Amino acid sequence: MSTRRIRLGVNVDHVATVRNARGGRHPDPLRAALLAAEAGADGITAHLREDRRHIVDSDIERLVKDVKLPLNFEMAATDEMVGIALRLRPHAACIVPERREERTTEGGLDVAGQHNHLAPRVQRLRDAGIRVSLFIEPDRRQLETAVALGAPVVELHTGRYCELEGEARAAELERLRKAAADCEALGLECHMGHGLAYDTVEAVAAIPQVMELNIGHFLVGEAIFIGWKEALLEMRRRMDKARGI
Image (spheres, rainbow, N blue to C red):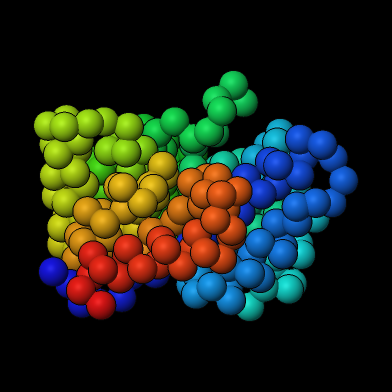
C-alpha cells in the first residue's frame, strides 16, 4: 500500500447541469469550486463541451480568474477549444473524446488512431505551457502513443470498472493496475477518473502509481443528501484510507 497522498480533482460540470435545467445562475459551479477548495480538493475539473450542455464559456473564465486551485480544462481536440485554452491558460488541458449524442463521455480517446489529428493540437498547448493530459483506455498501445505525442499525463478511463460487477470488475481493475504500472515504466503521470463512487474509489486509489483521481457526478448527487462539503470530505477520507494515511 502506498502512503503517498493521492490528489482529488473535483469536477463541477453537473453543478452546471442542475443550473441549466432551469436557467438562471443557481447553483453556481464557481461557488461549488470554492467550497471544494475549502473541503480539501486539490484541483477543479470542468469540461467545456461543444454544445455547452453544462459548463459554459463564462464558467471557465470565472474558474480561471477566481479559483486558486489548478484548473483541469477538459476539451475536445478542436481548433475552437484549443483557442479557448490558449486564451485562458488553465493549468492543464485534458483532451477527451466527444460526441453530441452521448449523455456523458463513453470511453477513452483513440489517440493511436487519431495521432495525426492530435499532434499539432497537443504541441500548441504544450508550447503555451499548458500541461496536456489524454483521457484514454488502459491499453498499452494508447499509452505508447501518448508518449509519442509528448503528453506528460494520461487519465485512464474507470467507467467500465465502475459499471461491471464480480469477476468482470476484478478483471478490469487488474487491467487498470497493469496500465498504471505501464505508465510508470513509460514515464507518464497516471491519473484515473469517470464513474467513481464511494464503493469503487478505494481499490483504484490503492494503486500506487495513480497520482490523481477526478470525480464529479457522484459527488454532486451525494451532495443532495449529505451536503457538498460533506460528500467531498467522505471521498477524501476513503482515498486516504486506501493509501494508509
